[in-house]
Length: 424
Image 1 (cartoon, rainbow, N blue to C red):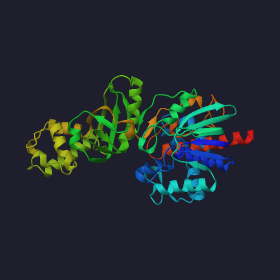
Image 2 (image 1 turned 135 degrees about the vertical axis):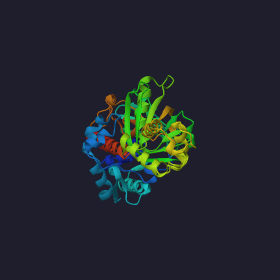
Image 3 (image 1 turned 90 degrees about the vertical axis):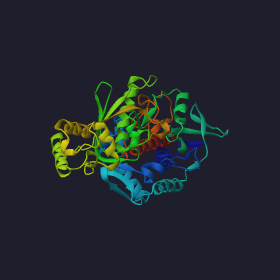
Image 4 (image 1 turned 180 degrees about the vertical axis):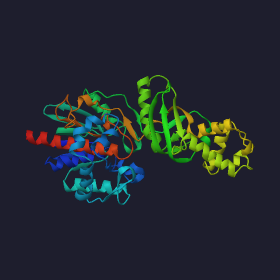
C-alpha cells in the first residue's frame, strides 16, 4: 500500500509528490497523459513563466479569484522559495524579466519539467503515466483509487491535482471536479478565465493579426459601470480580440456574465481602447494639428501614417465619418475633435468569449470553504487533499497561476506526508 497517492502530474501534482517524498512518505504519482508536465511545456509560449518575483501582497492582488485563501500557503512557499527550489535544488537557472516575470535562463520549459522529473527519480517516487483515474472511494483508514483500465491502489492520503478543464489536449478534462463531487465536495460554477473575447463589429476582422502595444483598454458592463482596466499589448483576431491585456480583462468579463447568469443569453459588454494613452485629448489634438499642418496638401487617407499602423488607417477613416479624399486643410475643428475622441475611445462590443478549450485557466472549482487553507486538506473527508487549478482559485497572466499551483502543491504534499507518517 502506498502512503500518499497523487492524481495529476502537472505543476501542483509534481510539487505535491516531491514535497511528500522529501518528507519521507512513500509516494505514487498517477498521470493520465503519456508524459508528465504536458501543460507546463506550453506555458509562457513554451518558455514556462515559473513564477512572479513580486511580494506576497502583489501575488495575492493578481489572484483575483480567491487569492486571499492562499495567504498562508503563499507565505510558506513564496516566490523566492520557488526560485530557490528551481535554481539551488533542481539546478535550473532562472531570470527575471519585465513585470517581474520569472523564466528559465534557457527559455525552455523542458528544462523546468526535466528538473522536476529528475527530482522525482532521485526521491524514488513511483510514477504511472497513461493512467486515468475513474473512481475514488474512502474505506477507513484508506483511500481506494481505481483507473479506467481496472487497476486499483490504496493509500493513506490522496491528493487530487488534476488541473482544470482548459487545454484538453494536455489532459485537463475536468476529471478532478467529477471525482470531488462524487465524494461529496461542492464544485463552484466553472467558466473560462484568461480567454480571448468575441466582438460584434465587422471592422475588427479587417484588423486580424494587428498587434497594438502600449494601449489602455477599459471594460464596461451594459450599464456603463467600469469592470476593469489594463495597459499593455492586445491583438485583433478574426473572432474579436486577444493578447495579454485582453486575457486579463476577460476575467472581469466572465465573472460579470456569471453574475448575470451564464444559463441566460450573455448581455454584451463594451471595450474602450485608448490608442494614445500617453497623451491627453488636448495634447493629441495638438499632435494631429501638427501632422495636418505638415501634410496639409494631402488627402485625409494619406495623412495618418505617422499616427496609426497602416492597416488601421482605413478603419479609423471609416469610423471617423470624414471622407477619405478630403484634403486635411478642409477638415473642420469639429471633425478633428471627433477623430481625437475616436483615437482615445475606440469602442468594440463584446458579445462573448472563446471556448473553454482556448482559455489559459479555469475559473471556479472545488469550493474553498471546504478546504483547509493551511494544509489544502478536505474539511469533509480525512486524508483527502486538493492542489492547483482544480481548486476555485485563479489569477492573471505573469506567473501568478503557477505560483499558486506550486504553493498549494507544497502545502498538500507536506501535510499529507505528515498525516500518514504520524499514523504509521
